[in-house]
Amino acid sequence: MKHLAAFGRFWYEFVVGDDWTVAAGIVVALGLVALVAHHDVAAWWLMPIAVVALLTTSVWRATR
Image (tube, rainbow, N blue to C red; front, side, top):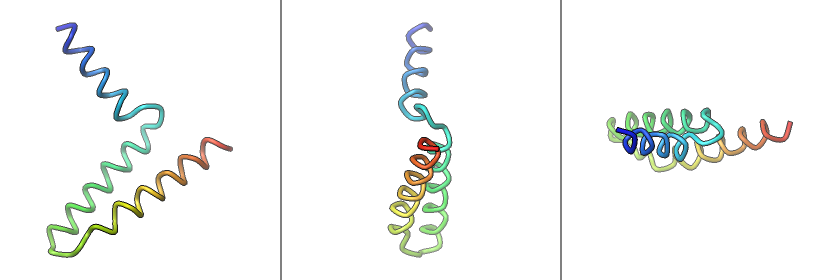
């Protein structure tokens, strides 16, 4: 059980890291891509926009 807990902590730290808002934003963006793609619309452009927006927001918050 100790190894399972360590495995879970590793993945939490790897995915969430220092900024949980970026991880949550990526989850929301993936959901939006799935929703848009489900309606037969090309959704490839949504993830690059989300990544740039999340990166910009994260860097802005880190520098202020």
